[in-house]
Image (cartoon, rainbow, N blue to C red; front, side):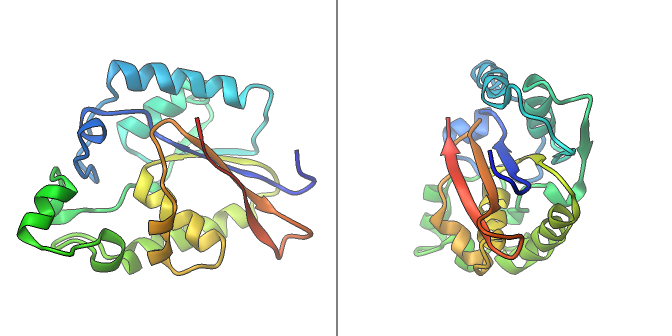
Length: 192
């Protein structure tokens, strides 16, 4: 445990689309039974921890994970925590997109009729500013690509560098500070 506030990030449990590799932005689909079981196991990893605030994406997959992890009654839904808007690529796999658009990379190229990395950065930066204003630990439930941009921005990197951070379903990660509140760091990443 750190002397400074810590930010716990939880990616939602498995959905049918995450299991098959489909881009799931604004489509609101439920957790699979395996996703629900994994979300329940998140509670074990968070046992004994207290949080000044608990925030969730408004998606049912994130809020159900929050609830099954034991924090639903404290959870506040924040629109800025929503997953990347994949626009025309919603529901498609990367393999399908590459057939139509060879060489495409989400973090570099964004999505037609959806968001680019810079659009997601605007939302992420608002969340990061809010996180730094909380005087205590915060627990955040959201989706993979959004959280990958969040960790990049927390560390002072451009949003495109979120591509460097893989994140599994029902994983927990911890952001924090090293010597003072001016030194944001990644304490732990993608733990299952």
